[in-house]
Image (cartoon, rainbow, N blue to C red; front, top):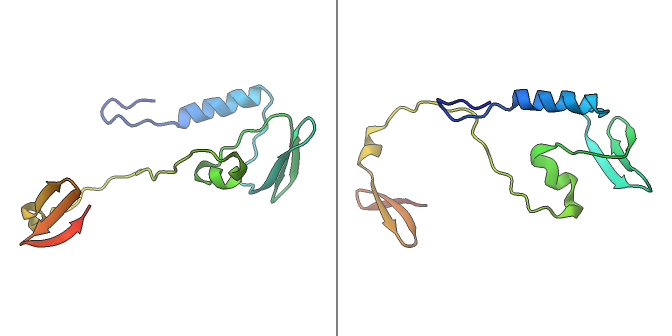
Length: 120
C-alpha cells in the first residue's frame, strides 16, 4: 500500500478488498450507470439511473469529482482538486536558469532582463 521509495499510495488492493467485503455483506454494485435522480422514500431510497430503477435501504455514492453535482442539496463543503498521476522529466531550458525571482509581500514576481514576465 505504501511505497517507501516514493511515498505514493496504491489504493487498488484496498478498493478491491472493500468491494469484496461489501459484497460478502449483501451489497450490490452497479457500474457505468449515470444516476439521474435519487430520493428518500418512506423506508428506503429510490435511485433512478439511465439503465434502471433501484430501491435500497442504504446507499453509497462513489462518483468522484461529480459528487457535488449528484448531491447539490447537501451543500457539502467539498473542493475538487486535480491530482497529478504521471511525472515526466523536462528538458532544462538554459534561459530559465537566469530568471530572477523576487519575493514581495503582494506575491511572487518573475523577471527577466528587467521585464516582468508574470506575477504569481
